[in-house]
Length: 231
View: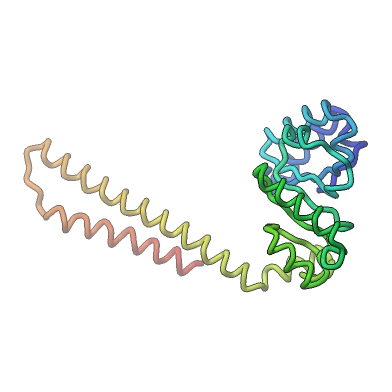
């Protein structure tokens, strides 16, 4: 979400941000606010205070158009940011202009040394992409990867992609492992409770512990199997 100077220049911005999170129900960790480097430098002290408050809301922060705002390294270190976005003006000629190539390498090295993610904007050729990969840039965006699309087209594209299906499969697999762990734990606790109850009353178990556990696990796993069929 791109943020301009006007809405972020007062306390109303934070209130609107909180209200938007409540109204939409979005997980704050899924939201990233982008401010330009020039905006971040316009009122450094106020921006530092505001961004720290935003960061406490679990919202990520990115510096957009980095390299055009003449920010100092000492100030950059103080900002609670997660990502640097290299301005497309430097990316455009990195394959042919040694100066731009040097600037981009320097930004990447600086960002990574500060523990920040680095993204290059405006990637349109394979040569640009290959240079950025060799230089250690972690993320990129641009027409090389896809043309701009509407929200509906983007959703259709994501849902139909093999990467999304792999993500869903991995997500459900992790959930299933967690669920089976809970099932096993419940079964063991049931056995312990039944054994304890019989021993307190001075009775011997009618069936072996292994059999009791097998019965409970069998029933629980049958329930899990039905859940999976529903999926």
